[in-house]
Image 1 (cartoon, rainbow, N blue to C red):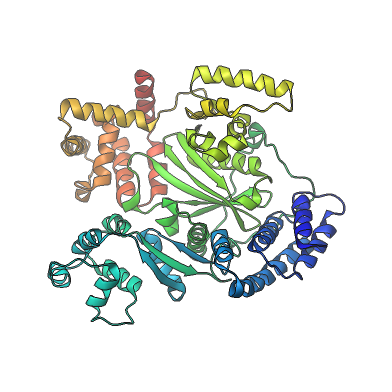
Image 2: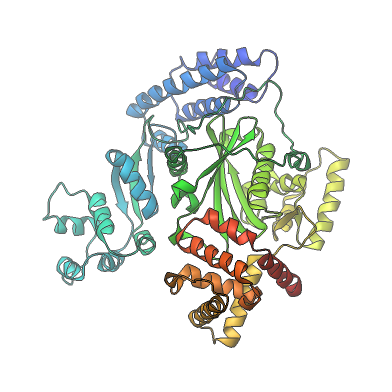
Length: 563
């Protein structure tokens, strides 16, 4: 049978679990692994089919056949790359499979991580910054006397600057020289990140089977494989999913937590993506939960310098039988969260609905989220794929509804049409209308505060009473907290004063609450929350902040009054 026909056959049965499909899958896999692939599209198609079968295996025999074929495919990919033309090479690069060379511009933090673990596989590709920008960057990074000597009223490319610094050596590694200067600088990591970004440095990462790409990255936590004994659950009833009120955390040691962080960084990096809580992960705060049916979900929390003051941004990566299948994150403010997720392409068409339902259950039970928000982009604003796939109806089936009453009415009319005629498709123009506002899923009848309303109110307050001077406002709020702490005999650590995160959070809380109304116990919790947010654990901050019931009542009261 021809390669193209075999690949089509495997695609047809990868999500089917009938009486004879296991044998058919093994037969197709074994025949394909003997083929000589002549096009990159054949390699990536077979690769993605194998990954899908590893995530959704019927039995151990099918799983082992797919695992063996994936390793053999790695050898075939290496051989293919030796003779491939530029177009085929580029297609393999874009596919982000093992043995491809990733060429991208990453954050300073991710570059540091790659250099620590994969230094021998990295090389400099290009620097897109102008000579003026390069001069501006290194005058901030290098000691003043060194910068003056190197530039001497002349502008340089990154290559010429590195060569001059290294004595014109032809062996100068531009990338390593640049990274060394940043590592040695006394500038804060957050400032380095912003400065490094201006250089637009592109690097090459030559991957292999040991690299944490989507091909071979696996969560190494102890678990039993879930073998698919029946058809997929394609439509999830969120109410039914939420009847399971107990989470099952997976016990992890620090090495396993770090491995989950490294795995997530590598997988996203190899697919040309980054998410802040994964890039800047606090390794030892990482959590993992068993959500059933072979699904595990890891939660990632950020290190202090990179956190948001008003919201808590916590990302996730989901695995099925250890294979990464989805990633995303949630921005939380009390019990409201803006949640965004993405299923990796090979696994779309599987149990996507169930996975998202379990994701909502995880954030609901772990963080107390009762109101989920989906932004317009997720349902089609400047997002052709979301319009084409009818993403609006995916969320509508979960119970999400537009915030606009007019759009709610339009959605009901469209729903009636879809119910009456199974072949009816909502016009793209109507879907684009739906994408002009966010959608909400409310799990409780209570009102749920939106952080943007709090920030807008703070901006108005500062404009009217502090003439737009936010620093003066934050300082005044902190002094008020300090005064109340003295009255209640609560210790307020001196190092919190002047810390941007602590000062901002004080100002945000002061918008909807007065520190004078807190008793000693509540003030102690608030101070402890400020300490954790600024210097400690975001995970502990969330627990402390959520435990201050008066604070929650105040923010809900503010929200109702503003509405």
